[in-house]
Length: 176
Image (cartoon, rainbow, N blue to C red):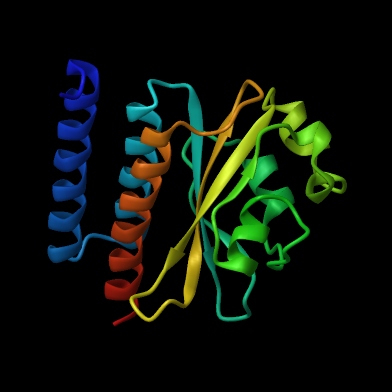
């Protein structure tokens, strides 16, 4: 039997998912839906993470979709990153279509060019989940930053996968 905390988190996740789906059905602005999803990731992690949703634009570059708790100068610095398997966490997830873990920015070669950016904000690691369309095309990424060196918990991975699927629905509906 799951612990009460796990059951509460699962219930909160389902409520947040249903709220997002209702927002999509009501044609809420895409940024509003994505901000709700990013805030849900942060709330369920009990403020132990900062979430960011990046979207691929028509040129195939990553753009901010919703990152409510990242400073504007950080977002400007990562704006228009080209997906590449050897660059950062979100750019690598967008390029490979796979979850990418970076438990420690200082020990990951993918962050050689960019590690000064998250380290300056007190982040030590991150992970990113690709957001994919129903046909498997990468639409963007859902990433989280950690203030300590660690990997995401199984619950965080599950939350990311579920909310990335909802983000895909929102992005697809917005493009229709």
